[in-house]
Image (cartoon, rainbow, N blue to C red; front, side, top):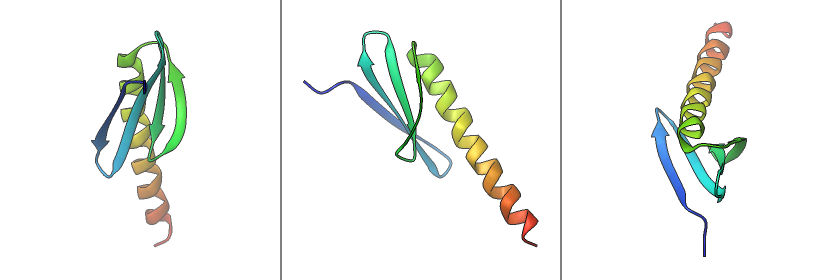
Length: 66
């Protein structure tokens, strides 16, 4: 049996959440493992924040090239 999975988009990023144990969720952003958490709500929040952080880093990097 495959573990429960969910994915959602945050702007241009794909955040994935996979339940690997009863109280353990692994978060991936764009296919890269980010972190693990003991609740789904914390995992979702952390995934959204990391996706937004990646957007911010990309914007800052493109702004410094000018």
